[in-house]
Image (cartoon, rainbow over all chains, first blue to last red; front, side, top):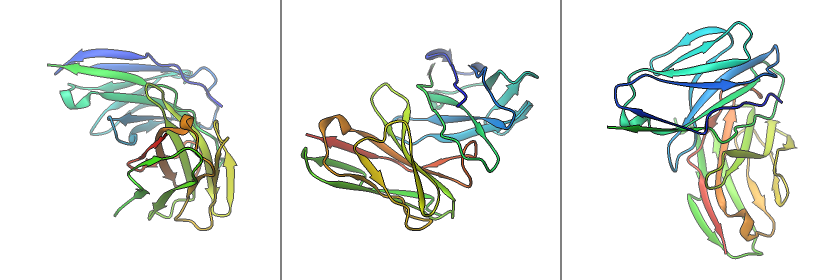
Length: 112
Length: 113
């Protein structure tokens, strides 16, 4: 299993860009990197997934360097509603089954 | 589209009682999962099923059992509840296993007294 390491918490202000970095030194060739967001009293929600380089959707961007041993979730112009816990996971995106490890995530607090 | 439905939403249970948490998905996903989340901690995998008819143990399986009789349903049973099983339980599903995107239910908040 590929283990991930992320900061326990981060603080930001409304309108700022937030970058959360995740380390995954043991990532395997077939592993994809996936980020989830969790609000209090709710289940995690998929944000973005990538394999290499850069992926962007309407919510966030994901930057993955060539060695893939880390990844950075970028949230542009955060608002108060982005206050949540963010989880980085790595796992086989193909047909092989793996048990994913969520870890404790990064608690992001956005202030006015 | 309902996605994943969990029931009940919350439950208070006496220690020693048997309890089944229900999980149903309508997305025809092959893989399903049960996690527990304790205050201040991340999600820990209890059991999983990568296809109907098969199940496997996750990180914290003791005291829990699951079954996967069909694609849609994945119930989690506590045979004899103990206070340490007080937690929020989330069910999830994905098209395949591993890194495939997982879709989560709203959770069941269980208190064992």
